[in-house]
Amino acid sequence: MYDPRSTDLRPLSRLARQVPNRCGGIGINPATPWRWALRGLRGRRLRTQLVGGIRMSCGLWLDEFFSALTRDADAPLACPPQVSPQQLKRIEQAERELASI
Image (cartoon, rainbow, N blue to C red; front, side):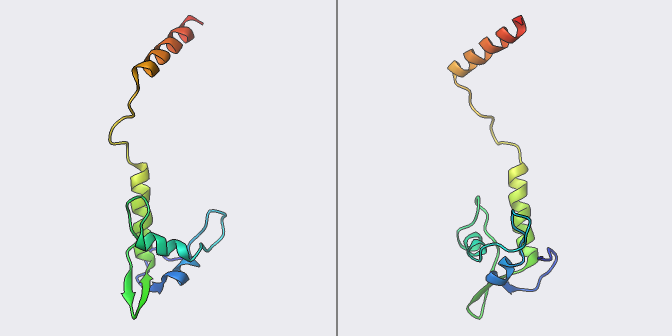
């Protein structure tokens, strides 16, 4: 299991073996942290450092990445979803039908 306070740099492939997976076990595909670092996920990128030609990261940076994703997911929507006039009429009709029951 990765330590979210650790600042010890580790190769991304080794770090991948320490991340919990959605099945309740430990270890994710080694390509996943590479994708997070190079392409990002939902506009966020995993912080890494190139050391001797090896891309590395640490538990602290991984925790910051996960925290940023969680904050983004928990944030309220910037603008409420738009409702078309037809949808609004259907909603009002359904509310009238429910009120008459």
